Length: 191
Image (cartoon, rainbow, N blue to C red; front, side):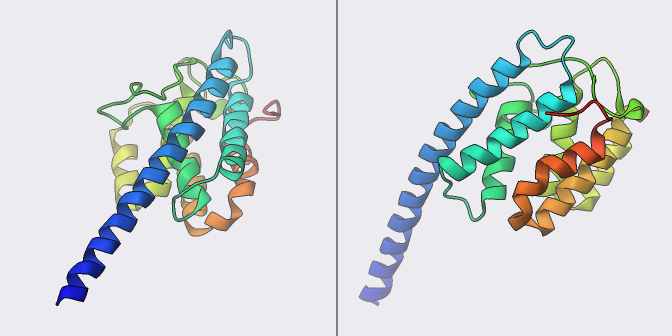
């Protein structure tokens, strides 16, 4: 009985240390990604929004590989970082808020014509990717059902497909920028 209690305490201590390390690495990666994204979003009114999104994804993957992660897979770290920087602390509550949120950039230059509007399509595309990676199809259907704009429905459907692919293929993380570009970008979306 004594060894079981000691083993439990050791396990909790190890878990606490892992969480501490994960928090430290998350903060470092997200701060660097936020700085990168803010620089890309600044004065981006006439810039290719799809290309900016792909560059932010590429930078997130690079940071996961160089700074390191404490998550089960680098894909989990990348999705968490992209969500914190591009979406904010949550999909509804906390959206566009949080210590790592990089800000808005309106427009859809570089997105496929059927996915364009004058709002933050970068955030919509990222939400689709992250929701699909983190949640199964019923929540994705709910998001589609609640969306009023056809261009956002098509953008969600395309980015859901990429998020679902990444969920089942996390070791293929390096292909994420290419998959996302093919799903949502027009011929001008070149990072």
